[in-house]
Image (tube, rainbow, N blue to C red; front, side):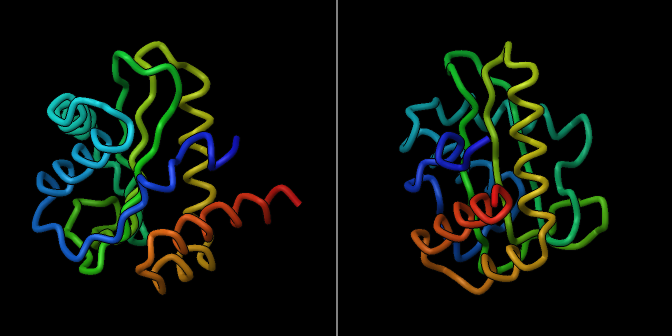
Length: 154
């Protein structure tokens, strides 16, 4: 798995604030539309539908919302660093400030799971998260995410 196949550098954003999970999903949908050409409303609906199955806030200030969509041929990602942490309903009740949204083809089986595992491993690393939280420049954030992958491969 390779960060550059999942995440376009233009899909990395620093967001000053998101007032609710619904507003966060709106911003994710807009980013997915502008970078990947996905339909904003379809993305929002798919994220909200998945969230009804259980929270995608995995703890320690990290959320990995994800959904399966028609019309895409590979797993795609959007990464947000929130300046002001958001009450997300995470498993540990901690607010979220690092959000990596994943979109998989509807029929993607193992690729979707591999991408989720890859992102989870990356964002479980406290040093990586500390570096991400110390930056508000999307280019630097993308470089941190990409170098984290290179470090693990070494």
